Length: 81
Image 1 (cartoon, rainbow, N blue to C red):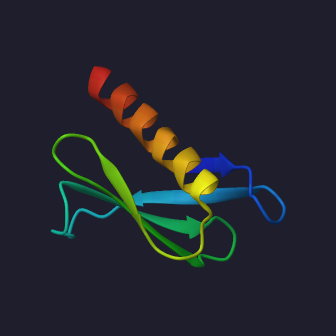
Image 2 (image 1 turned 180 degrees about the horizontal axis):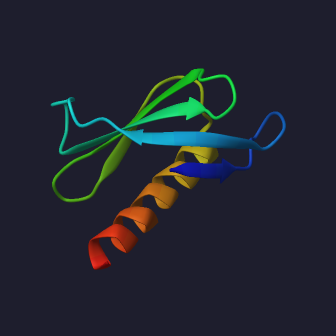
């Protein structure tokens, strides 16, 4: 999946959101990369109750929230289809 985020300090950016099916840190883990040069931006981990936490240092809180909401919305779309 690709997400478009409004960056706090810099130009807006397309982010690749890739589910990590091998990771056992949480119920669901999504790795985050810049879309054009594959720079890692960290990851978002979800617990079984749907709460998430950002694991990384590259994104501001507002950017983390944008990606968390994007993932939650897209998970709901996938589950309802």
